[in-house]
Image (cartoon, rainbow, N blue to C red; front, side, top):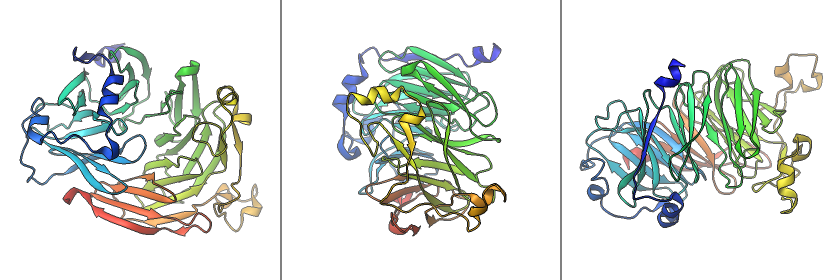
Length: 418
């Protein structure tokens, strides 16, 4: 009870803003091109700008919801980059310090900002909802403990603390849900982003457990995903599939979020690794994983998903019905006929006799990167993979969908020095 009191938030919304739907429609910018209102005037209500000549350190990187852009929190503010074609489209540099969390809302001017410890004006226990088009803060949350993560949907704001998650309505900042978790210093949390479903995944109350909230169905599913603590996970856009990795970092597992069943397991490697990012392709045909071992792995998935982003699209009448059915109908195993499969050990025919390692599915394609650097991955257009690193590097690579193997580097940019 004492912990709940310590984390009790306060929120405030600027009375001039009546509806985020109105903001979104007015602020929609193609290819992340923000209005050129001038740096100093745009941030005059946050802080006076510096001239941009200071060298910045990188605090965080994160994709937007469609992976077409990413945000970089720096020691002097934040920057927004478009991926294809790659270019910096927006930056704000401040005198008071930087932001450790910068969360975009698709390609709009709405951002969630959390200050770094060294930021004298915006402490790490405060969330700012910033509209750069209007050049002002339209919402604010203050907590008694440090904010570990923020996630946005068009209708919800989700704030992650170390032991609790708060879900707010975007229109009026009304608190809708509170979820208690085990210690979550990484701020692990992910959302579905399709408008017709709202699914949230977060750490459960026990080691290795992921809690999945299907808010539209008023259903909670606890998935015992791993024996060790959860290190990373992600959801498909419709929330039907969950991919997870533990602190051990050797196996990635894909689950059906409706009934918690394990659909597929793939192996990144044998040695322990810190998984920093997991991505699922929009058609749920591929899975990408990055770790501190310096290799991005691509795996072929054997699951069929019925939904907006599925490979096989049901009729409008069937869709909602299938979402309420169990995995035997909604998620069927499928080997895609037009692509290669993940390689198995040469001793996989002795499955059940030899240790599980020998029957594992290994990665289909790979790309080598510097070790010990945190990279996040996403899928770009066609058969490309996007990679952004905490060393300020950006890669765009392609892979052979039939033969796999080593990926081909298409682009390399040092974005922090741009």
